Length: 318
Image 1 (cartoon, helix red, strand yellow):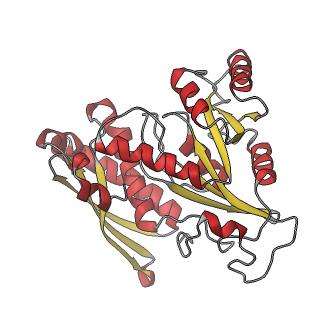
Image 2 (image 1 turned 90 degrees about the vertical axis):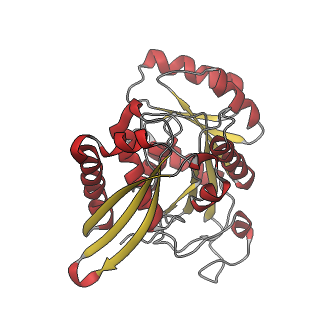
């Protein structure tokens, strides 16, 4: 199983004289929090997964897939980089959207380094400019993402516009999907961190629990397989997460929340075909991530207007 959330650190710990190991780190060693920020659908989650080297966040071509603050931890000999993926900053006014944007802005306040992510394939739009203006005093590095699908003719004006908006910032074309130029980005990020010892055990890769990761994988498949049929009114609650080491088996039972009966029908599909497809695709991913057999059972429940219910949102960590 992945070492996910054995310890939780806070940004203030970065500047303590001692850390988990209990001894001061060498002067050259660096550690700290790096918040990825940008408008929706610029590929922050894909980039996070690539930087950490394992899947932690749901990824989809649909905007606003990321809902929670997701922490990935990359430990190297010279630095421990704590990467914080945030929901895209946007102008949504629903309780769900408001909480998502609030989570993103809170993570900005906690960051040692702010990494702005923009989409190299679509260029700089009005919302990118708004986000850049909001974080202008904090940004030191900008990742121009999706260089795998952006031509040189697309990338050059985007990089030039970023340099105009944020003078002095390092601008790095990168691909979260293929890993192109990721090493250069990590080198710059590590060098920008404050000196200090590790904040987490070296083997830990996330603050998120394994239950959270399982819910993200299932939700990603719902988003992918329902495409434009379903608005952003689904959530996944893990009811059972039980390891059976003797059988090399992980038993997961999950409930998919929707707001209306018609949405339940969309998720289930004709004769249950879609929910079986969602379950099979999610199970295969989970077996790869957890390196064991997975029994995954999915149910769908109608909870009217759950996305406006503060109690449900709190239960979902929002």
